Length: 327
Image (cartoon, rainbow, N blue to C red):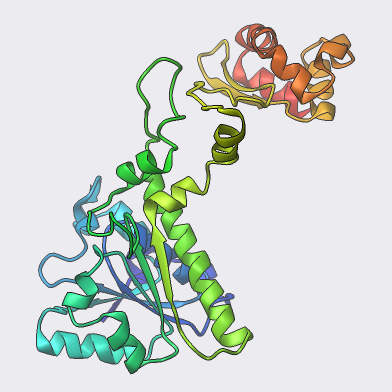
């Protein structure tokens, strides 16, 4: 077993008392969603044991930039920091036995296999719960452990499309775009951590003494971010469309190009902040203009306000803009 702290350069913060000290977590997964969840737990003090397959390891070891000094990717080093690493062939009887012994002494198991894989390996919930009734099993997958799509493989880009965030991201009239990161995986990881800690609270604080299954689906994690889009459609038939860098219904809130080619994000969302923004750009009278009194009023005039702010920004370098707005 090897400690990943030496590989990732964890500093003094890793050695301080942190809120999850005393929790042991067994990571049975790879790539992004499961390991990112356990990385968060490790950063806050949990003892995380990461299981990797012999010979192959986590595929993330070779994704993106590979550090020639360590022969592993910097992404893997980031994802694996503060964890303990063990190579284990769970498909072999001896490896399965070791995995069971680890699970018997673990608070939380995190896995992000395709549903049914853990059962085929002989580590399904029935087996784990019998071994350790206090164990919490966190399962992250594309579509969850039940339902008509449960047997389909799922990746972040599909979860983002199914969850709706892809549809509203991009320029009007053009194809949807993705963010430059695996957003769906990371969102599911956050909900996995939230679910795990809720289960710990139920077991240890409410005093049930029992573990439970936390079932996280990538598409549901994304869908939960979709604000009021579903009731807006149900009640008023509104379909929110792609609006580029602006935020529909909240004005002003956009990204503008400065004189030096850099982009500056500016938000004057509340009534008071809008007044201060107008003073900062030399148009204090607009802060008292009844056409812009409330957010609803400003949204009716979003295009003209965007043009006004854009004209002010494009005539100044970024440094000057920042000094004025933060003064």
